[in-house]
Amino acid sequence: MKTIKFASYLLYKYYSSGSTKDIPYVSTLIALFMLVCLHFFQIVVLFDLINLLPMKSDNSRGQNFAIIALCSIPIFLILSFVVKKSDLKKMYYSPLDIKRGNFFLIIYIVVLIVSIPIIVFIKQGHL
Image: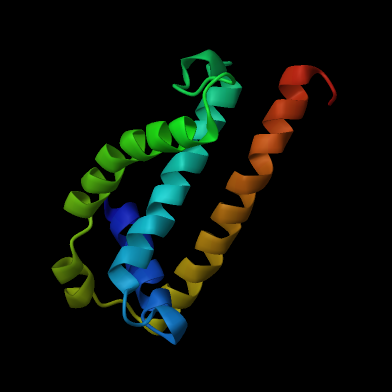
């Protein structure tokens, strides 16, 4: 839980400036939600659980979008309960911790994104 809150703080600090300075909390939750989705897709691909996804090829695009939205709401709500805006505003870390944290967060996200196609290639026997 401590790692999630630290990553949330880093994202909140990042989104507190620039074009998202008016909505840093929502942007942080969306970024965390995307990380959760990437982990979910890793697990789905790794264990061949694609048939468990609620989407079907004969559904319309709108139906698939609605299914994804309905499945996403509980995850987003859980994240909003775990990571509270008031907690993020109260947190403080040293500039060195922030710099290291940002570096490792970027590495983590890149490894997470790159690992999904690698897992697919391994599962298909191409690597």
